[in-house]
Length: 35
Image (tube, rainbow, N blue to C red; front, side, top):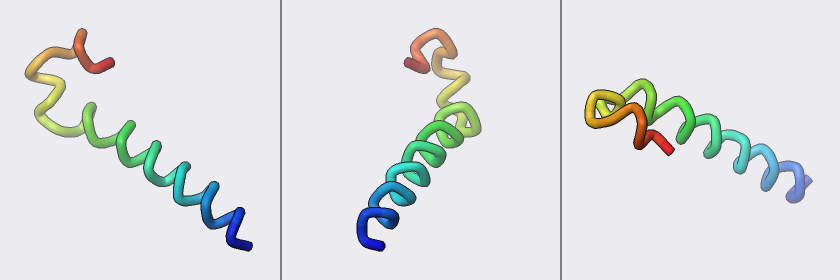
């Protein structure tokens, strides 16, 4: 179960980082530099 938790945590972190930059005002700073 520890392995599953590690994978779930990685998916949550990636989803949060992927839904944070575009949702935050960071897009206003430069949509081309959004990586």
